[in-house]
View 1 (cartoon, rainbow, N blue to C red):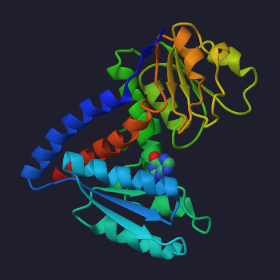
View 2 (view 1 turned 90 degrees about the vertical axis):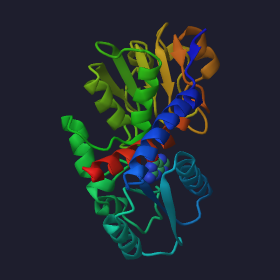
View 3 (view 1 turned 180 degrees about the vertical axis):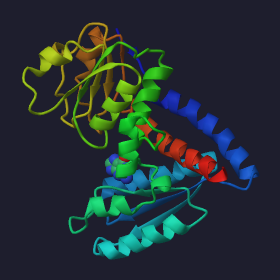
View 4 (view 1 turned 45 degrees about the vertical axis):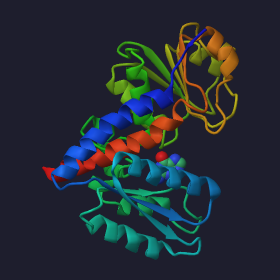
Length: 275
Ligand code: GUN
């Protein structure tokens, strides 16, 4: 049976490391600050932003929530972002996605100051990730790499197969795996003979958002399996766990790491502001 990769335990390790850093920064007069912006009433989004600000409090990060009604205009949202860009208490700005249909996500993301873009979605950050320069790395991909490293799995020379090519997870995690010297393959909905490709993976990252898409026929014996699906996994856990060497559960695997990396990026931004 596979080792279960415990995202909550790794999260708790990282949170206690972060708490120490936050205290040091606060003593130097640079308490990290995060602004979370929520537009509309989507219940899942409300839950996520509540969890984000609550976790900030637990490690001593200052946070504020900006709620706009579903009917707000894009211009009104851009004004809020402009104020936050100029606010010295704020080191990170997170606009919860998805936005209402009448707003352009691209225009909104482009408006966030590059050095406060703790989601790592701004094109300057995505470009810097691609060329391997210092940047804010998107939270879920960064959390996946932390999980793999802190489990003691080495990536250099291994074949990593990513299933899914979203801008939030698939593409950036592929870049990070490449930076770790893995041999990287990206699969997606048009990939032919998916199981043939995923069966070659030493490290298999499932990030498609299709519950139970991947079963034991997709997993190489001894592989490390990371399941990003939420709230239901993309991997049939029970059967994959019989042949994998390590696997993340859903919930309790990747999920807890996403908010942790958001706090990590906020602390990093405050550290940069100190220099
Ligand atoms: N919606 C779903 N995931 C995310 C995320 O990582 N960041 C933001 N801002 N919105 C999201």
